[in-house]
Image (cartoon, rainbow, N blue to C red):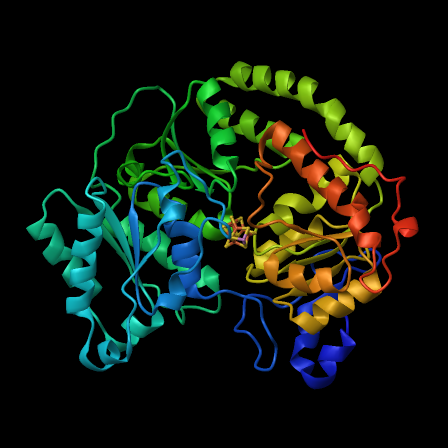
Length: 474
Ligand code: CFM
């Protein structure tokens, strides 16, 4: 049933169709908000832009690359402490960020010469780096700088370097999702097929749509290696530029985040006949069935079963300890895109948590469809929420914790609702069996931390609760 988030609907009636409560007996056919449309004027969206989706989500996790923004300096921020796509290349991609820093005179007279100078300067400053990605921004797109031509010029002058150009300005779509699409296709068109990889196993995959947030990719990679599978490339977490040029030689694309990376899998299927297999590394059951699916494709089921048995025996008792303490805790599950449905039912089934609300800031209709179908009755689903709606949802639903990002998370903190940063988590990895227990631990710590019982206006030592558990280490 459509739900009136009253404060907002009063002034923006169009928002009414973007929030829905899943009523008794309702399924996705009746409990589905409108989604993936342009943000309604007057509504303060927390979405990112198409440049952000291309560069900050998908491009920059690549580890052995100079990532250059061609635009004003503000576009490029996102680094060490904000994004957490770590790498085994000494985290080069997080420590250094490059921008041409366009100014007014560049807008008036053009910035191609300056871009070329910047590229040469960057390669000179980091002589071991021979790969570069360049991202167009709104400013360079509007003045029509031909970044591709400059990249070609440099590659001709410096035969040992290779450059990828991503034309995905901020206005290139309703949200970051538009940028995901653009960079998927651009990589496919420019780079796939330009390197012939060495094949060392009978079982060869690309691991796609996984960005190595706090080591998630490395955990999954370890499972595949234990099964004797060669991972040709990882798109793009902890990924190597040249490995990703050889994606066309895999036998199978194993896809985690369909929202951000199904496009390249679909293209690889059409152009090279490589099938796509969607998996899920979060949660014991989804992960186990994912490993089984991959194994089944290659006929090596026994290898998957050995891992599943060993890991489950090791970690299930710990998960159950948390489940006993998290059962019927109320959670608002408010991520960006696919984590909505990757997490909804498995948080309920494996941690006992009640999901009282789901939202997606840029997910497509299918993401919400999958999310709603995996929620209990009574859950409030919101598409592209604004701050007033978030506030009202928190007031009425009274969640024990919110799993979301920094923007709504900071608002939640102000109204004393615990929040866990579910985008750029710092305590992960959360994938894998141990990782899922770690996620339970972080939720538990968020809910049971005594800090939320304190009032800034009325702090008295006697009132600090002492009877709550607080796990400090694992
Ligand atoms: Fe995919 Fe992601 Fe997500 Fe996403 Fe993101 Fe992210 Fe996310 Mo933040 S690629 S859709 S654009 S799973 S950065 S690693 S956590 S909003 S739910």
